[in-house]
Image (cartoon, rainbow, N blue to C red; front, side, top):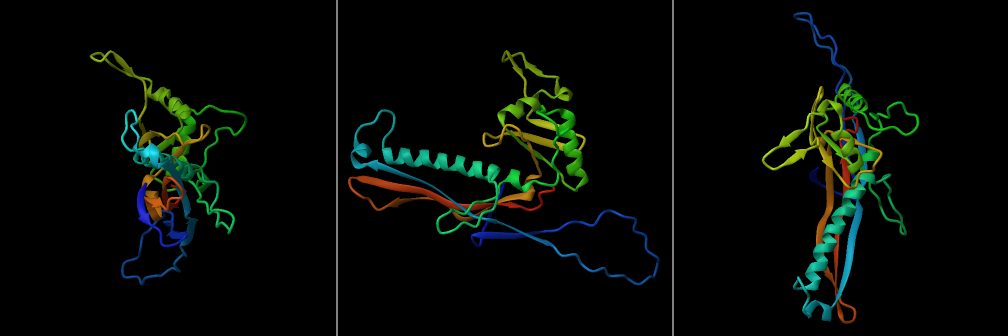
Amino acid sequence: FAKVSAMGTYHEWQTDELAAAAANAQVEGADYTFPTLSATSRLGNYTQIFNKPFQVSNTLDVVSKAGRDKEYAYQMEKKMKELARDVEYALVNGASATSGTSGAARELKGVLAWITTNVETGSGTGVEALTESMFNDALETISAAGGNPDTVYVNGFQKRQISGFTASNTKNIDASANKIINRVDVYESDFGILEVIYDRAMVSDQVAILERVKWAIASLRPVTQHEVPAIGDSKRGVIEGELTLVAKNEKA
């Protein structure tokens, strides 16, 4: 998603809707009629603080280690990757925007919780496998609401379901490399071309069909690394940042 700047712990934005398409024929020379403007909707999300502290003894940082030089640098890089995974998990699965208290952390509202209008559940009874018909029903509903979806985020299980759609059952065989290409990374539908992206943070029973420009990550404090004053014979550091998710129009 695009990156923007947050100006406070509760980041706000506005969303609007176009009027429905209608007949529009005017009499030549007629005066204008000015309608009352409709108010925009004001939305917001709380910033969430993410951090990964780590500590390395001064001895471990200088002794010889197989395959790496400084232990502190290694742990810093490792914690940076772990923090990125935590951020991704929150952006997808954050349940609700929570203001927090003196004893509870602020929490952001994630993609799956934001999407409430255009949701396809098939027949809505029992456990159902994702079908191409169900997938296209969702695309049609989104398109009718004015959205232009271009990206699909899926867990590994649902990625395999999409790769098995019958409309794309012609697979390519690369004879020179002796391999069969059995996947769908781009799906060309009646409502546009969509990129299918495997995301480990996605849940296995949902598929997120998004118009990517309608989402952004608002950063209040960029992710940085800083050292913490040492206590005892060790070196301490923290990877830390604060951000939230912007859902410009969940109907898209």
